[in-house]
Amino acid sequence: MLISEVGPRDGLQNCAATMPLDIKKKWIAAEAAAGVTEIEVGSFVSRKLLPQMADTGDVVEFAKTIPGLTVAVLVPNMRGAEAAVAAGAHKVTLPLSVSETHSLKNIRRTHDQVIDEARAIAEYFSGLPADERPHFEGSLSTAFGCTLEGPIELSTILRLAERLLEAGCDEIGVSDTTGYGDPASIRTMIREVRGVVGDDKLQGVHLHNTRGLGLANALAAFEEGITTFDSSLGGLGGCPTAPGASGNIVTEDLVFMFESMGVATGIDLEKLLKCREIVAAGVPDEELYGFLPRAGLPLGFVGAG
Ligand code: ZN
Image (cartoon, rainbow, N blue to C red; front, side, top):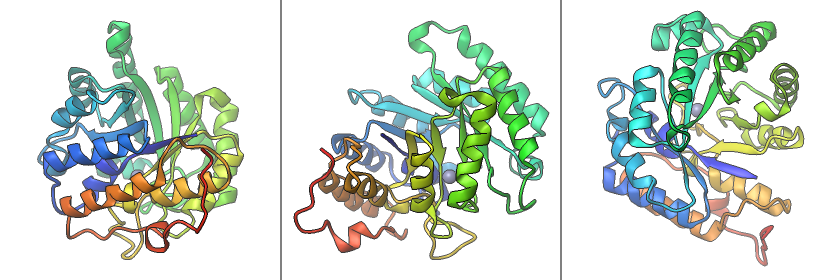
């Protein structure tokens, strides 16, 4: 079971304040020390658009010094992919919003243009020496519905999954960017996308907890054989369109669910809970979410080990 911490990227890019670089480093080091083996540490986007991510190059450079940690980043385009390679990221994710309206509004690109970009990036990566070549994921965002378009036709989503793979992505991810998914739609989506790209090409999901179904959805995905789960410490970032709701699944609660079930995550919950203090100090105005952090571990709790 791989828990991929996305707080330093998905969490922080939704915060009004910018977390200082030294606190980002402390956070990443502390989570890695707690046993988290993959962290999405930032995104290579325009500084003007997301000043919170302006130091991603430095963050990657630091994170790469931590033994055993897979350093992941998000990129919107080729320029971002080049920056990711220059910094030495191990894993690069390119999001493709399955809602074309959302894609046009967010990055001013049609589906065809994003697929072309994916192909160009894959070609660029394949020309690199093996030890500099990042793992390349194409992520289907707004897969369970878009705030502008509502539900997206399944056939559209499946075709895009197929095209991302054809363009040269190593792996396809499914993202419930808007928190519209439910356990049944999560199951259906995983089966359908796997039917098109193959089981081994869909290993990870990115789920949000906007409407409180995050853990139920994660469990449904787990039962479908998904092995990588994105989550954010303290559910950091919230959701601008749903006040009071966390954005991503809360890492602490997700790890607690799996460990309670006897599914090993390799993460030490006591150490993980301590990381919250660092995040709280780095973005003091942000609310941190989570049930486990409030209630504490049950008496006599033993994890999966
Ligand atoms: Zn997200």
